[in-house]
Image (cartoon, rainbow, N blue to C red; front, side, top):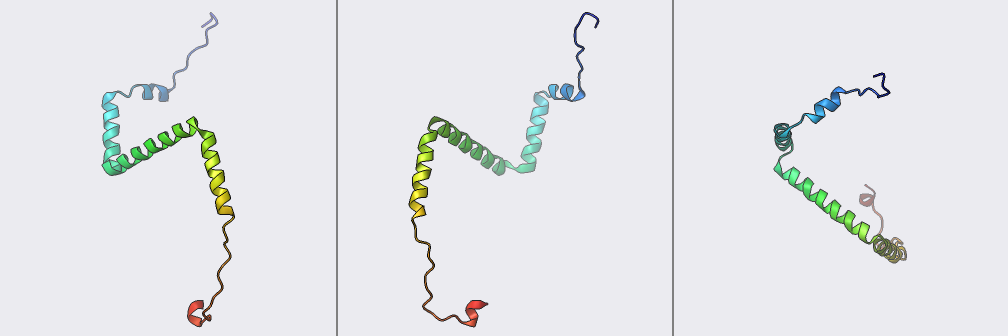
Length: 96
């Protein structure tokens, strides 16, 4: 220690996480499968795949997506949203 080296401190968490082997990973996978079920895990993986695909598409062409969104916003901004006038009289039943 006197030769200028910094002593290495091993934390218990690091030692425990490094000792997970194939058997531990299989045990964790079985527990997750039992808790969540096959259908929910398959749906989650499908959503992860869609997210990755959307991310890759966004990285490839970010400008095209922004332009598409702006043209859609312009088209909907000019839409008339004035409520229609009522032609039937308001009754107590309508107020309930």
